[in-house]
Image 1: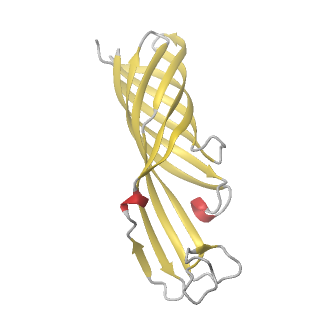
Image 2: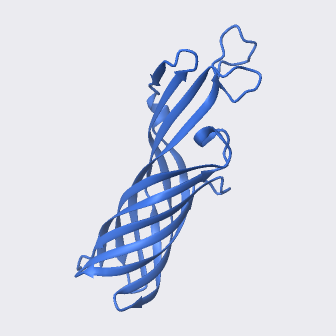
Image 3: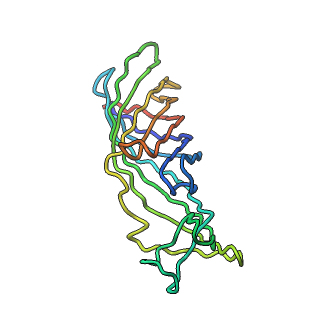
Length: 207
């Protein structure tokens, strides 16, 4: 049986990667994730599938210094939260992501139109857009930075793992409704992690 569906979730994102993601270690933010998926049922207990999901994350840096040619620095790379230089500007950025997970699902309880399952998955995390606004602290003039295509579209990770568990019930004939929780990490060292609570609706097609 094949079941296409849609999903949405509230993501609680935490990061200890400094200075990314709100410009501080252990930063936290809440995001909304939406997606579509296709699930293939091989038996009452086992299925597999793939999906496409999209979401955004925000970054803000309160203290940025743009070096000039008069500074005795090896490069003109902007300095973030550097105590030796002033805070000339602030930065606010929004990054849009696309994920294409492949997953395997095991249903360990199946009775009276109620299913309890767990799944594992992996797939690429793709950055497809990034917008940055720089604000001068003295004049409060904001400037949109147009980034080159090489910086706004790239694969951030090929192997982003995820672990999920959920409850599935039949709403009406062939229409299924899920409530699920999920854990995802951007990297194997668990620096950037996401905890999700979401909903899925799928339609069971007859082969």
